Length: 468
Image 1 (tube, helix red, strand yellow):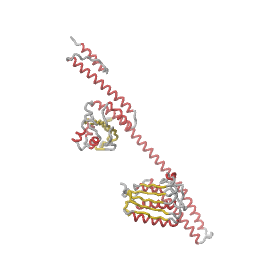
Image 2 (tube, rainbow, N blue to C red):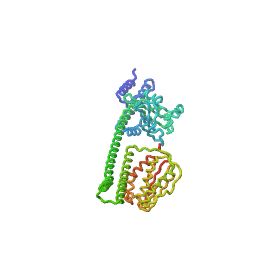
Image 3 (cartoon, rainbow, N blue to C red):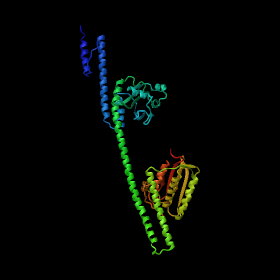
Image 4 (tube, one colour):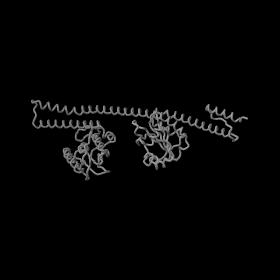
């Protein structure tokens, strides 16, 4: 007599073949035929679970694939894959074009700290990752602490163990047969990946390989486009600066050249009666106008060198006190014609490694500016002291101070202020911009402390040793 359950099992098997997993399979009584029914029922449940799992994976990857940039895609992976894989951390690394190095590109974790961060790199050759690439199979480590004890030289394992991770799953990412990188899923629980079927990992790796490769290419294109746009903006800025140079030169060189031309015409005209004193005065004026033009051209050349990245510093060790005294003495002599006193109020003993020519230019600029904008008969104080592992140079004047509007224009090219020199001196609006660039080239800082109507203190801080 044929058991009627056999016919039901054949019908159920046909449904399973057609992808219909919700079938009723009788199992009682628990004889040999019943045990066959139990096995068929377990198969139906497993196939249904696999179907739901793969359907969920397809839904997730479709949504993730809608992203464009790599970081967005990886963020979506982190948010959506929890229904398929247990993890507290996901990392992503790329293999370089030579195939010799693996570099961490992205990581997210729900733990307080991430030690294995972007930029971490290690050779691929001879590593366990190379074995993963060669086999194309995901790797499961269910006890990272024990793995680290067995392989204490594994720096990457040490870092994620320090993050609190206790098990990991590594999926190779391979596109068109070419390895491009790895996805690392990690859990704070040991044994997190023991019961998960490796086939789903393979399917995830295949899906992610294509998606991540696409996102990487789009991100690279976006990055290059951004770099091109930044370069275009820089070229536009340099073009505008060039036009400003030309306008500045045309404007500020026209007047002294006109004066020199006029004086030369007068001196050349033998019929024009001139006393020796008048002739000397005209010649002195030529010298003054020439000095004015040379100063402007020097400033323009300095800005050009800085913008072209050709400002070279020649470092040497300076005795700061002797250096400061020499500069202040020279500036004090230049200020006597205006009745202004320049005094070195404080100077500490010690040495500084800097470019003496550029440092002299920095201090000359600050002191001459203080004299230029201070009323005749006032005092300019210079203080040089050790501060925060470096040197602070401060120049305090009794001028009009800096308004909030002028503060925004300080240290910029052609940033002329509302205040005017008190003795008719020339101002090109370049000195402070050049000074700022030279200070920054030394790895230093420059700023001003000022209250309108109460003078200003311009200060520079330089490290005792040049930046490496």
